[in-house]
Image 1 (cartoon, rainbow, N blue to C red):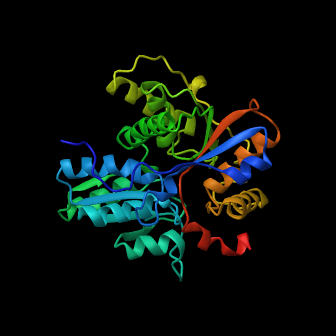
Image 2: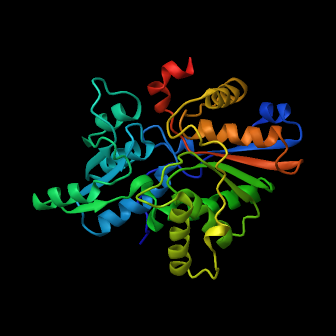
Length: 324
């Protein structure tokens, strides 16, 4: 029996960014299109949710609870996954209830989620309280942590490493560096484990998006804890320490969800050269980081560089004023 519940279209495309590569002639730039996973406008969280929703069903739960910011891509995709699986979905979203729903918040509502607004708490601080309330009413709850980032969710990216390795073999391609947005840790942990299992030679360059801690833990600690659990369960022998967890924090100083000229510049660069849309919170920041690396030659020249597009299109509409 498969340990995942099919939710997306895989493998997602792996393509060369030909026009942008000409603008950075010392590098060849590729993109992995997880914005095309197909689940309620796509995104990388679909990979995690295939494993998480399967676990919820295996445990005979009828209700899923998770948390995030109001424009959470994870929460929107969780709402869609629950609709497909026939599960009730409760979302704990930071901030106060707005007069008008837009972007991901609007889509989460359309997808049938029960939405609870939690003020300053956007990383699941109130999950246990809601779980107790719902279980008192007779629901059997499955709690998905912030960003879907635990070992179960990270398995989606262990599997994604295998997918990328197969695509590289088919295209006779060697990727030297992989840039991506890292915010809740599951993708980074999963790719780190998958890289080891499937012997992907690429170096990971995760770009930090959110400088805030998650429930008292730094992102590096979250990633380390998932890797340690994964290493044990997948029987991988390593002695990874906190110092081994690489996270580039050069671009997160303005804080989570704050759109600057950096994000706008990156969104415009990819849109006008390749017809591909980034989002202003995650991929816009990470893509700017990658272009900055290339501009300053912070990685060796003649490298094949991959940007892993994690999706997030709906948030563009929330940030319309900042992007004009």
